[in-house]
Length: 161
Image (cartoon, rainbow, N blue to C red; front, side):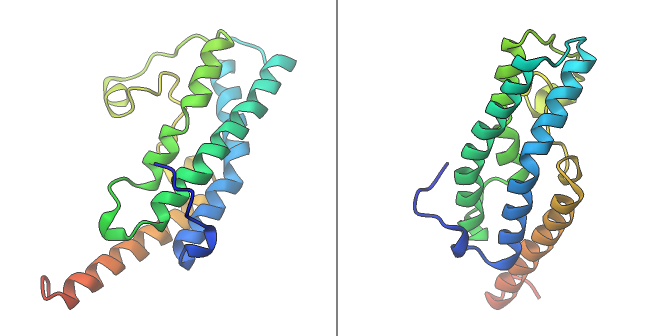
């Protein structure tokens, strides 16, 4: 999904605010989730685990820097995913690392397994707030901006009143 031609300067203010908030939140979120999941699985976080967190954070940031930017620079009428889906796809690195580190796979409910089948460790995020309060605010604002943009266009096209 990544686009090499996209730039943060190409983003309007609401998508830019969301992009910046997500990218700032990722390292802390990755660390928090991996530590929580390991703790629930009875695995202690030694030096190897902490190194893995740093590696996963870098890989996640690298993937998201392209994929999220690509989505947010795509015209709203052509977006086929939402930013949370893009972020959830990037949790593949945390899932792989947790498995390599021997963290037992937690029991997941049927809905969770159906909605995010590749997320064996339930890394998430499920909501904007799972990442941070800043991401939550930026995500809600972005969603309202996107809806207003679409409605304004449809009214201009005479498709709605």
